[in-house]
Length: 190
Image (tube, rainbow, N blue to C red; front, top):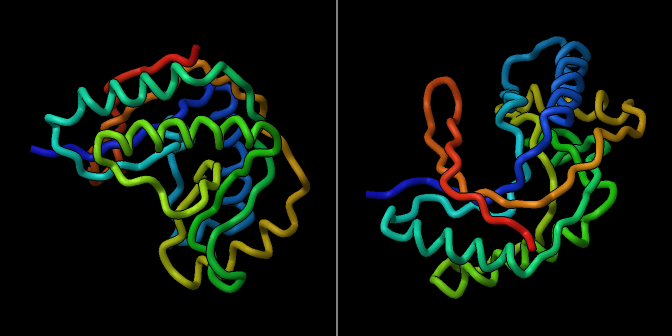
């Protein structure tokens, strides 16, 4: 049997609430178009590595590898701020919040996770790690065209400083109401 899983940093509730306020603002500015799927604020996280479908017999090894990676890192802070999108200027695909401070710490943690997981058979990422938090996924070109002018008009903003003391291995179950994330393991930074 297999499960779908990923490794992520959980966010403080106060930051999630601020991000939910931005989502409401953007929904109003975009006039609630269909074709945009908003991430529910209680599910927001910063993904360090997506593993996809894995054999459930590998979960203990994954949790051990993530704990080893966490033990190589000290607690740190990062700041979430500004809004952008992935995709072309004419058709955004993902609406995101970036990292305005602490990117180097996130990259170091990502490399440690990637290295430990590669030792148990998970290939390292080929693409450069781009730390971000997904606000919404854009499902069609029409909605994608609406995003750019709204995002370009936003003032620079910050959503708070997140203290990182642990990382979490999550199970992800897809359902009609959106994905359900279940924490399987917490690994503490030393």
